[in-house]
Length: 457
Image 1: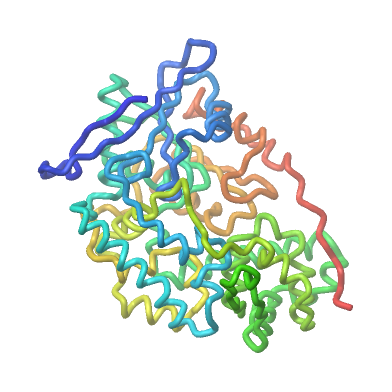
Image 2: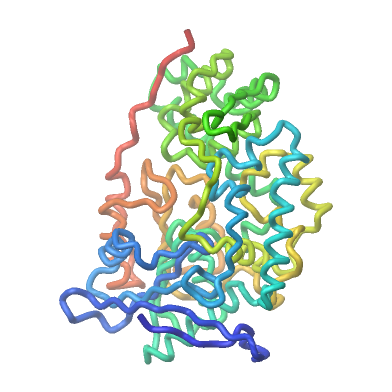
């Protein structure tokens, strides 16, 4: 394991320093291609170091090439690590479904308070530790990675991003265009799209739910008969749950019992998180809800998996918030902006987190052009899962307007971080010849699951 010792603020070096761990993994053959692949982890803030299966999949993806991976600044193995473990209890991303953002109350403002108080506390904790929080963003991380490239004496690199890490790859292309040969944008989360008004972004993701029902209606006549109103089915189910929420008591045996409330907004938030594993059951689930039968909801809301003390052991949650909020730059919302958004659409409480940034203490130290669409001729391959409501192909369609050498593929039936043989085959072929069209004929190798068509009794 190597380490980068660098400046917390590269533009105005001071006393604060960072330490970033770097792993250089050579192929088993001992002979590698000339250009190494640098992996940009996502999360943001998720450490993949030490996760053997994760590393083996990456090595399979890139073939006979050197893999360079790291914890970015602020991650759990870096110094300083931006740790705010209490945020795990209120974050929908780290306390799946049972978080206060989704299930603590039927009053959206009460849910909001439970989250924003932890966001404020995290920012105060980090600043009290002497950390210049504004320096933890994609602009600074891109500079860190280029310093590592130079220290390892590589002329250029190939980049492989995971989720938010793909957004960091775009920043690397933006700020260090001569240092990169090609890029793989895995299930990408790009901040120049995610930083739009949260209601706008929520409804583009919600469309994925209806698109899924459209597949069912097109492929199965019984589905169309059960849900003749499939274009309205999601909204009708939401309205039913708003009128009669699903309420359940959990955890009472240990003396720490809690009541969870699932209304229409909670349903949409949960579907956003669970669609890849729940899409085949969705038609029957919606039909049941419309009929007032909530039997399926216990499994859907993972009631048996309730954990009163959630943790996020591989995450530096302070970095998670710093990355999300700092990379907004001056696009960071005010508290008034976010409160108005929640009043308009309560479901954004359990959706993507940029709305919390009204309670973050300052803008990130990023250039004015940080959220501009990337303009580059760098060849790139973007990978998407069909059932990923977070990061679908519309992101690539948008980015390709200014990155004309971007190719993209959607893998049938898969979600965020899709894993199949086709993925590794395509990445290898792309890295062999980044400027050539990649054969995506294997993209449907994973079959769609059979639709569950069980009309309400």
